[in-house]
Image (cartoon, rainbow, N blue to C red; front, top):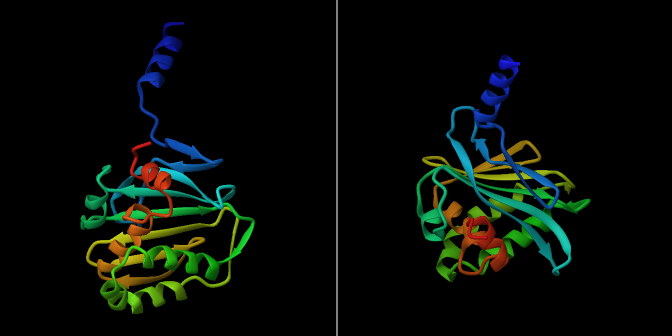
Length: 191
């Protein structure tokens, strides 16, 4: 009896390592590791993205080395970060997703920024080919000293060198004109 009590007490006191959060029936890990040698990132916040206020499009999660509610710090920090989105639509062309991302990106850029980043934007759009299906995940990782690595459904599609594109792309979700104010608040960890 004493041994069983001791084991139960020990199990209660040991923290659970594989914690997760559920948003819109999608389970997001509280921590992820970037690559095999990269740091462990913590889930800063997550949200369900709806289009036309009713269509569940994706669940997005923002992972950071040092979680914060400060959008400027998120964008400007030169640390590993990941924006992940989990597709909820049964099937959608990857090009349609890419076009929507481009539209959301461009409204957050000045004309000069858009001109400067246009080759990177085109390269990013070219990474989205074929179809995305329900449960596919897209990971957009900023890797300091390297750039923005895009992984779609487990396949690394490429890297866009430098930090400027990553900063601009993060503005889609935490910039001055985010995809939605509630989505921004959720991934900033405010809600």
